[in-house]
Amino acid sequence: MTRDAAYRRTLYRSGGVVVRVGWRSASAEAWMARHGAHEAWFLGAWNPFSRRMPPRWNEAAHRRLRRDVASLPASEAEGSLGRWSEDMLLLAARTATIRRLMRRYRQAAVVHVPRQRRARLLWQARPMRSWASKTFQRMGITAG
Image 1 (cartoon, rainbow, N blue to C red):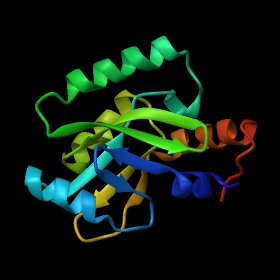
Image 2 (image 1 turned 90 degrees about the vertical axis):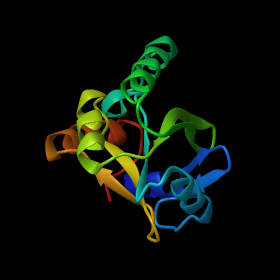
Image 3 (image 1 turned 120 degrees about the horizontal axis):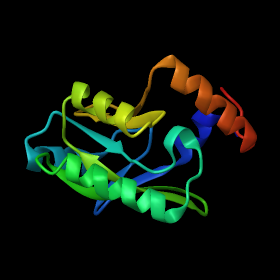
Image 4 (image 1 turned 135 degrees about the vertical axis):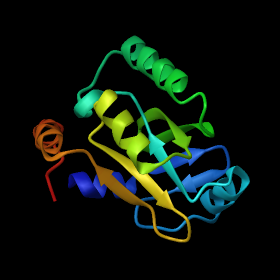
């Protein structure tokens, strides 16, 4: 399975909000309307650059992320594919804020959910993507 296929097959959930990359989501539209947002994001702090970290490390990183976004509309969320899952947050924020958080928490990509459009991946800068590609290859997921 390619990396993009893995992201596209992943189901991103927060309460009643359900999102898949490449699809529009009525439940995400409703969440954004409730929060007065024009876009939403699924962002996590687990497993930086797709490198598996111990559970306690991931939990501590997630707590730091929650503190960092305390002033933003946010809901607990999860991304899951098969037996794999990661905790994350569903956030309403500006793109610049999300990019800063991606760098701080070393995330290769986030899911962007713009209003009245399909959800898409927003990738971190090229060097991170290259590093992530090697990690995905070790996991048996090819670039594509």
